[in-house]
Image (cartoon, rainbow, N blue to C red):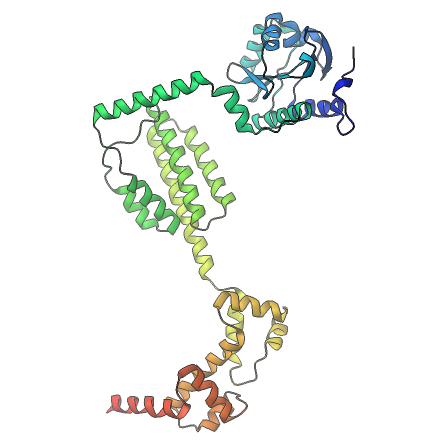
Length: 413
């Protein structure tokens, strides 16, 4: 058996890459020359148990597949896939077949019968998830051709041919004509928009109100079967709801996890009514999460609460950020930054605001002199007290007392 020396270069050992791809994709990889001679096989599978080597018609079919610019995919029973890559020198690489779903007995038996395998040999169709298979395929294709493709490139090249595009256009025309002939108004878009707005805002009562309103018109037809229609609608709405929740502040991973969970649950339901109930419950779950997140955002950081409490208890003392930080066992710069971020003001300004607030009460409701008030609130001097007070109120302490004490007296009279 000849070595694939033409495909070994200084940077990449293709032999090694293909051996690893077999492990990742759970697929046998074979390389044939242009005459159909097997050059190299990767993966432990005897030829008499190999669908490609055993079934001559299948082998010839795959050998006729392939493009220079993209791997060519071949499906069996919509669940089993093989891939063909056209190489230089007219060589052909065939990967698979593998099942894209966990293998069940009936599917395995179909492959055995289809490819003329001996049931007594105990052939077991390998399984690989679609994501792992395609990622491995793209890696192998890149190593061989140097081309960088995306998953979407593979789907478009394999499935969106001119015939498929023609069918899509034809179906669009037929659907348009059907709606025009029926002249049935569609459910207003603004209703769904209001649903999504309520979720993003955390307005559960508003959401209930929108849902309880009578629909005008009918929903779009997403499937001929009533149950499938309900499931398709649930998938669409739950997906939209999860995006609205993300806009409302929910972490994307959390919202998408809820979406995946409820969509899977909807898929398992047996009646359209059950699907509808799951769909609505998904909306309520997401709006509750938004409400909870907004409540968290509104709550001050525990350290901010501690700062305010510390200031209240020590208003008549000299308050230093460094002392406060030491009391809380945190860095002073961190505490200052956190407080400013949460309140929009520095700790020093907050302390002065609280002292001025206390001074206002004392000026109105006590007969303490300005010097006594300055002393009680730990200002360095009466002059300093007057300067700070005027900065925050626009009045001197005496002007403030004269103005508001007089109002208080007039009110009492």
